[in-house]
Image (tube, rainbow, N blue to C red; front, top):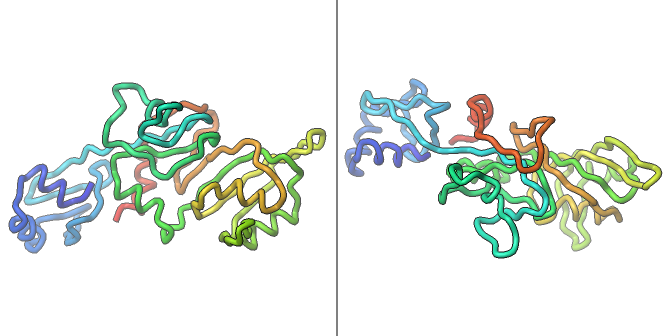
Length: 240
């Protein structure tokens, strides 16, 4: 939550009073005087003191294991949305998804009402790594690994940044490969287009990690939970 909004909501300050609080050093975050009025804070990981009073935020963060077939949207007339995966008591009108996963892609998706955090996690300068696991309809080779590392060029000429591709298993009988891929971009249908550029097709795609967050090994599609304090602390570098 923006620090100035938190102060306004709790202390009902005017703009002039707000400015005076910052200039007089009466605003501290984690024991340090704060001058950035729009700083993103959360009282679960920051100690926020204003004019001698501790303030508390009320943001929520859900880590969802999105099922395939569910759309990343606030509403949809034909398909279930990621917000429909939450129980009624957990649904809020101010929640939004940090990024998106295609309807047929499953896996990790962060739902929150902290808009600034979501923006920073998606900003290209942050270079937040997204990790996917996928079944491919062909045998992935060392040549493919090298091509991904060098930077795949889409069929339309768009060049991707270098990506780390790892072969986890090969089903020679079916001619399929199970792979793990780490990228720091978020181009439209990027993973699918990267493999298409190599003459291969993604059969199933699942995101297992985003930045410091990852799905539990026993996570099942449809599972979700509030971020633990430990998980939220891992995101602290993305609060600015």
